[in-house]
Image 1 (tube, rainbow, N blue to C red):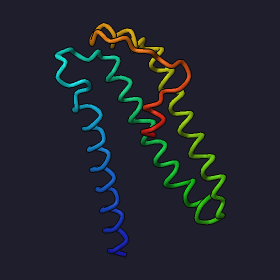
Image 2 (image 1 turned 90 degrees about the horizontal axis):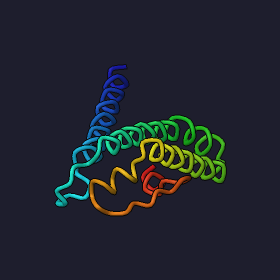
Image 3 (image 1 turned 120 degrees about the vertical axis):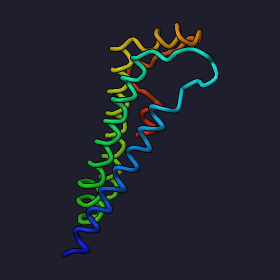
Image 4 (image 1 turned 90 degrees about the vertical axis):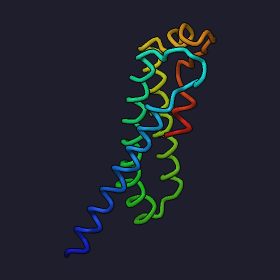
Length: 129
């Protein structure tokens, strides 16, 4: 019994450390470093939503899709379809957040570069999710 509790505690600690590292990368590493421009607050809001979506996608995958579809039922194509669907849904949500926050226009003002928002898919969100 002690080993089971110890194993769970180690798992929790590892998960927390990995998520802290990811949050550090998303929030502390300055985008477009060296430009001297200040990143708008809307960018950080979107990063927060992105982190929440990534955490949600990970735990859906880890605790539901892998055990049910891959390990128990061996339904590989269903699993792949679910993963693609989760990625597309997350990227669609991130694109909606971009539009809602008017992020492309704010980034254009901050960095002097024309940003072309995609109304339906956030390709960075799709890749990272």
